[in-house]
Image (cartoon, rainbow, N blue to C red):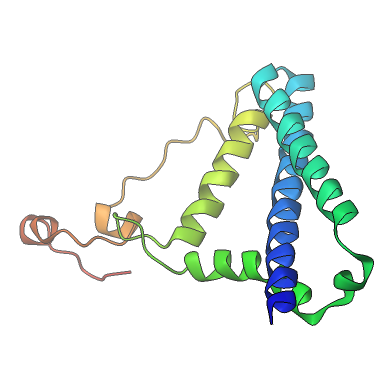
Length: 159
């Protein structure tokens, strides 16, 4: 039983470090492109390199220290799925403003990518940067749970 617990813990550790390394590699590419385009600075690139190197080094040490027989353990494989499963469960919860965590995280990441890569700048941007956004009622922009909003400006249909 202790052996299965150790294997599960090692799987959680490897799963978390591999997720950290994958995220670091994503931002390494984004930072390198942003650095080449001069839309982002060195701190983003250095942060991505350091997080990728730290996670990769720690994962290499864990894989080196773990017995080869333990790597084929079902408990380790269950542990590998633990971190992604925890993130999927956490993404279903709501933030204080009523939005779900998962879609808000994806939207924030998308906006940060656009900002760092310079996709919506006038010089070589997307081509529709001159368009003005259409004003929408706050209840149609995101889920609204404030009673004062509905008392002063009733919504026709809730999203």
